[in-house]
Length: 195
Image 1: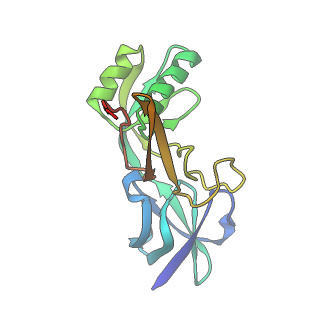
Image 2: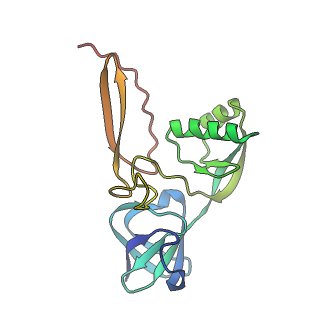
Image 3: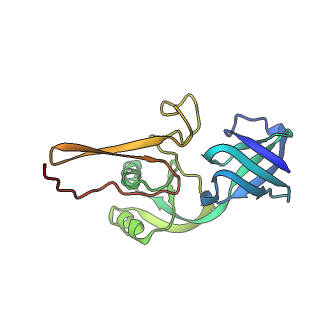
């Protein structure tokens, strides 16, 4: 069986050596080892040293030569728009503050449907509507989600560990955890520690 053992970032592999494409939804693109079927029916084994977020346009390098290009599948999403760039930036901040996967564009933000978040966005003045589009959300700043070695946060693995610190009652807490593109978490805490 063909084996893909390395992921090359979009634009950093020779497109002329593409042998096939594989179209995957966002939740199927965080993988380490899995048997995949390319869009043309070619079967291959993705066999990476660690779980990696596959981005639209990445090239999966085959041991036998050539590449399989990753394509982001069309998915049901929510499109968020705003009356001004300032409001769009504010909406992006609120989404980021909730650690929600979001694809940020110049004139819109794409997120997964979540009625609580959609209601919050509407309350902040956003215009929202259901759309179908590829979902390729931004990577986080704490781990190397964007897999560019020159990126200031691109030290270590594509999924590094990060920490969130905060202070309760005069002493600090730090919560380390491994990044996961599907891992949505809330770091609000109501601790009342007595020492």
